[in-house]
Amino acid sequence: MRYLDFKGQIQTALRDHPAGLTWAQLRDRLCLPYDRPCPTWVRSLEADIGLERTPGESRALVWRLAEDALVPMEG
Image 1 (spheres, helix red, strand yellow):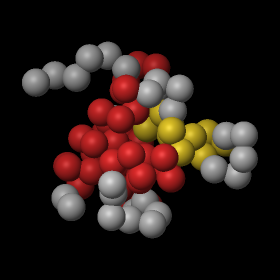
Image 2 (tube, rainbow, N blue to C red; image 1 turned 90 degrees about the horizontal axis):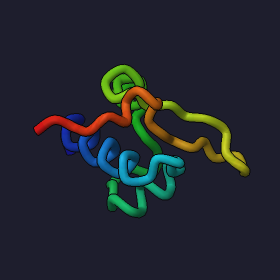
Image 3 (spheres, one colour; image 1 turned 90 degrees about the vertical axis):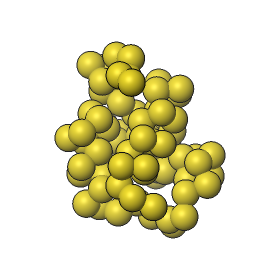
Image 4 (cartoon, rainbow, N blue to C red; image 1 turned 180 degrees about the vertical axis):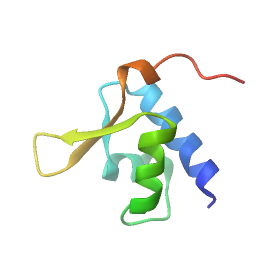
């Protein structure tokens, strides 16, 4: 899987779920081939699509898009 494919899938899933999803939820919903996300790709997502990760109810981080990143996607 290329980074651009990963980015597109994550961005679409998080736009569809503005309250956010955990990595496990994203991995399972998107059938991603990774047990854990690549730290380099996660940092790139923070810069590219406004990814924010915040503590959830359990130990898992909730992934969501920043408020200003929720504008409609182009193309």
